[in-house]
View 1 (cartoon, one colour):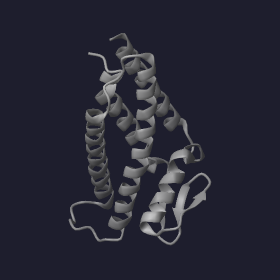
View 2 (view 1 turned 90 degrees about the horizontal axis):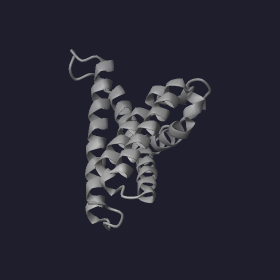
View 3 (view 1 turned 180 degrees about the vertical axis):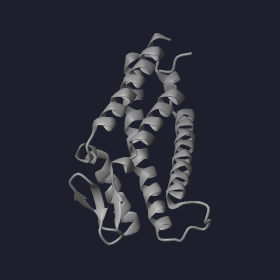
Length: 175
């Protein structure tokens, strides 16, 4: 039980550190997340993105900017916390707890890039279509689309984590 509580405390510390970093970061400080996202969005949509200092990744041909608020850091934080909570039962030792934190952090990063790529590609597609509902503004549609994609991404990640957990050896699992 002590190891699990320590794992959850470390999780909260990592979450706080990521939130602080994101809150204080300039777009240049978020290239670790924005670069792979812009590269993946470009591969999916065919758009060319170039980095613009102080702005983010801009596609001149699509007139679309991937900026700080598009980084997906909040999704990464939510995914990391969800993964640790879903798998904390595996933290039976300091080594298994450290492994859980590291794997959850890496998986949440990969998931954030993938889900964020999907969200941005859909947003780009929606931006080229006239609004289907005249009562929904473009900003509201963008917000709704983001919520739906992020929620779906968290659900899929949780299901993947459960399936991997079911098929993983139970070594390190405490009762």
